[in-house]
Length: 111
Image (cartoon, rainbow, N blue to C red; front, side, top):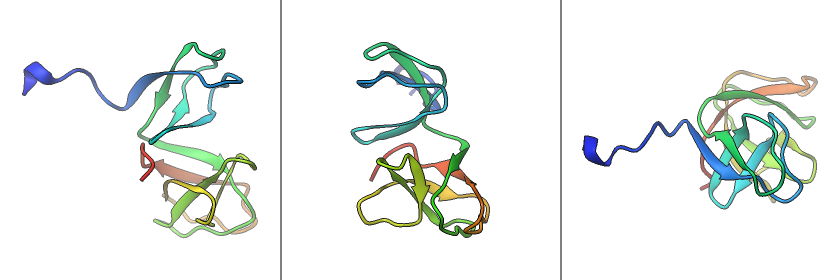
């Protein structure tokens, strides 16, 4: 199996989408989900982390530990509402409705 091992999959390189990216931006590329490690111009290679725990701004909703977390592309925030949004991970801590952020363990892919 060592002959086929390529690299750790925690971080991968992808082309930056139209509009470019800033450090910390969440990227959804087809079935991939990751957080940009640095800024990049459109088309430039950018490293994204597809594993790990990250703090995201959230909508006015509450999360319990282990609750699914969805990304609202238009609002650029996480939400508990699955309809029309993309699941990106699970909450790794409770966050009341009044909280501005929630800590999320990324799934690394979109199901």
